[in-house]
Structures are given as C-alpha cells and as structure tokens.
Image 1 (cartoon, rainbow over the protein chains, first blue to last red):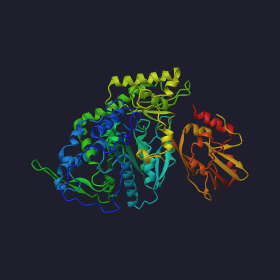
Image 2 (image 1 turned 90 degrees about the vertical axis):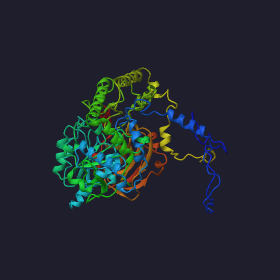
Image 3 (image 1 turned 180 degrees about the horizontal axis):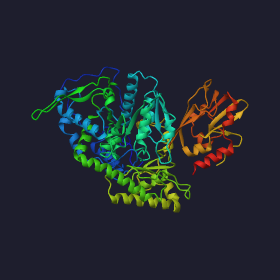
Image 4 (image 1 turned 90 degrees about the horizontal axis):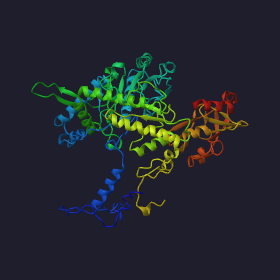
Length: 489
Length: 130
C-alpha cells in the first residue's frame, strides 16, 4: 500500500494529546467493565495529521476536479453555505430548546418550507426526511394513508417506469406495496399503452422520475398523470432531478400529488461522504393533513414591528414522525443560504445552465459515442460505452481511463435500459473550457479503444492505485479494521 | 457464443434441462456474460415449495447489476444447489453445469411447449446485441 493503515503507523507509548490532571475525585470503573490492551493506534499528533492529509490528497472531489456523475449531481457546494451553517445561533442551538427560544431556526425552516413549496407548486412541505430515498418512503406512506383514510383498501400496486431511479422500487417494497414495472417507448418516455394496461382500482399510485434517468423530460407527462388520476391513483414525483426544472416548470402545476426534493443535489448541500442528505417532501392541498409531524407554522401573525411567532404543529391526519427532531437542520441552513444567494433569477439560471451544459456535451460526443435516446436532454444524458470495432472495450474501461485525465468517471451501467451505459451530468457550474477538456479526453479514449485497447484495459495509470479487485472486495467483505496481530482470520 | 442443444430457454435467460419429470434450472452463458463477475447469489425458495411459472427462484448480484431469476415453468422444488451461496463465481465459470440452481418436479409438461429452443434463444440473444 502507498499509505499504511493508521494501525501500522502505531508505536507503543506514543501520544497525541496529554489530558490535564483530573481536578475532581476519581472513581474506579466497576469490575468486569474494564479490559487490558484496548486495540487503538498510538501516534503523535503530527503522524495523525500527515496520515489523514495524505489520504485526503488521494481523493477526487468536486473541489479538486470535474465530477460528471449522472444521477447523483455532484455539483459545487458554495463555501458561504458552510459559513452560515456555523453561525453560533444555528450551530449551538439544541433541538429540545423551547420553540420560543429558537425562533430564528424556526423562521429559517418556515422560509425553506415556503420556498420549496413555491418552487415545486405545492401547498405544504415537510423538511424531516433525511435523504432522497427517505423522502420517497415518506411520500408513499402519505399516499397509502390517503387511500386507507378513504376506506379504499384495495390499492396495493405502485407503477414504476423502468427509467425511474433505482430507489423507487425499493421504496415501494419498503411500504409493503407491489412494484409493477412499466416499459419505456423508443423515445425514452413511459409507454402509454403499457401504462394503460395496468391502470385499475388496485393502483395506489405511480412513481415518476421526471426528468427520468435517461435525462429526458417525460413528453406525455400530463397524459400519464391523467391516466393515473382517472383510475383513482396518486402520482408521486421523484424530484431528485429538480435541478433541471428550477424556475421553469412546477411539478405541482402538472398534477403531481407528492414530490421529494434533494437538498444535497438541487440545492448544493454536501453529498455522500460530505454530509447527510435531506429529502423534503411537498404535497398538494388534499394531502397536507397527512404530512409528517411536526411542521413549522406561523402561530401568531407579525406586523411591521413584531416578527411572527413560529411554532411546531401536528397535521391533523399526520403519518407521524419520520425522523427525530427536525430532520437535518444544518443541511437546511445550507440550502436556505443557497436559495438566498441565487435569488429567483439565479435559481432559474441554474436550470438553464445545467441543461445547456448537458446538451453541449451530448451534441459534441454523439458522433463518437452512440446516444440511444438522442433528443434534447435535460441536466444529463446517457451514452453507450462500447463499439462494434472495439469488442474488448467496455464502459467500465472508459470510466477507469478517464481517471488518468483527472476526471471522475460518470455513472456507469445505469440505467439498465441502455447497454454499457455512461450517464453524464456536467452540472451548471462548469466552464466551457472544462467541458471541452472533457470532450477531448472522451474522444481520445475512443481513439485509444481502437488503436491501443490495452491502455484502457489496464487503466488507470496516473492514480495512486490502479485497478482494485472489486470482485474480491464484494465477495470477501472485511468491514472491520483490526490491528495486524488479530487480523489473521 | 454457444448454447447446449438439449436445453430449453426463456427470454429472461434461464435454461431448463428436462430429465423425465424433473427439471433443472440455472442462467445462461449469455446472462452471466452480461452481468459480469457475480458476487452474490441467494436461492429464494426451499425444498418442498411449489413455485408457479415466473415466480422468483433466486437473486443474483454482480459488480454491475442485480437480477432476479424466474421459474421457467411451475414446479415443486426437490433439490437446491447449496454450494452456490459460497461460490457464486461458478455461475460465471460453469453456467450450464456446476451452477445449476434448483431441481424440481414439473407440474404441467404442457408449459414446456412455450419455451425457446437453442436456435430461437440464439436469435433472441443476437437481437439484443443490436
């Protein structure tokens, strides 16, 4: 290994911190609760610092380079978000504080609920769900509660197009409902005939990812929604790709009954290892009473001199809590900051540029990489990473080779309806120079696939480590790091 | 890519070997090639259980994707390949022999009529390549 494990750097007796002498009487731990030889590494502060700084430098993040990971939207997180999240009033407040003593926090949450509602066209919003998939679960539980509340007990089917996010079928199963997969047509839309065949009085709802995982806007969206409503079902919108629609179209106006937003995608809060997600849920008026408990509301109207009094309220038919306290509040602060910094026109510009950048890449690459659903895309598009005259080369090899150019690979092998899929999402913040550099790298890789496929098969060459044994890693899970002497089994 | 002539196939890439009234099923060479390295396999049934045609008999996961394996015809499970859980890579190395997944008593032999023969399956695979 190029960097040893921290256990391998350990030297007996070395210390990083010296605890001050105790200034209170000491008490022995009860017998049986102590042990000898706690297996923790022993290092000095500088050893620890250098170890983790070195590891961080091996990483590739959106702060170090281009990161066109489709579906996951690895967009730049403006650093002012971090400043506001660290303001002492936000950072040091306690979730059990009396609401009257946390009015600033509640005002921010109320503002965020209102703006998300305005952006999506929804009457009510809950900030509780802790991630996108959690928002989906919340939304489907709301749909379920709605039907049950009306005594409509037959509805157990959720229709899910094959171009939906992979979490949609999982959500359905988690909600004790049955997944019915709906095929796509040749333009990447929901196949209306296939959909019609499944519309009956057992349909609880449809989960529609729009734009879908092909990066395409559903061209028959109003017809799809009408078909579902006509058979008594509700329509769930997977709003994970809302970054393509900000200020352009409101899902609530199209007839979506419920939708989740991903603050960590659309609203620039940290993502993945960078921080917890947040998946607020918006609903139309007829579902507002089912929202998770509590939501923030105005208890007493304010006036020019006195601000309104905010409080926590329980919607009358609430599905209950889906998260302790108030969701990921620190993430809400970052998303709120982003909206305030962008303003109305700025949010619209986010969508415009995200769509423009994706289409620029699609058009520049489509002669080199086959794009099976080749029409104006939204924030991302899907190309095939394979050629008939380079049978040895797969999407996987292209992805690995891109790392040699300092570019994070796009999502690959998803969606499943595209062979050797490469799902490319540049995001709105990238410059034309960066996009051109990506195109040049992709074109060069396509040439290498014919002239020197071996360079792709053995890539990456310029990274600290080359090809990791992904098969072995998946087959033989070692999830626990133990000091060398005990890690023999 | 070659497929044994003595087997029947489904368009979801399962194969069935019929010996008397006993059927044996696994996934085809084409399926394992599409999935690439298989890292996890779970048989989703038990000996004695009756599965209808199209019901899930196993789940597989590769480094690329996850897939369900379905019963080609209805049957009562008589034997399960227990080894596969520990060595799912057998599906890659020997899809038609060592990596059989379940054996079962075929309930209605008429259902076999609807399955693909080698030539039809070969054609089905070629069509998906384009």
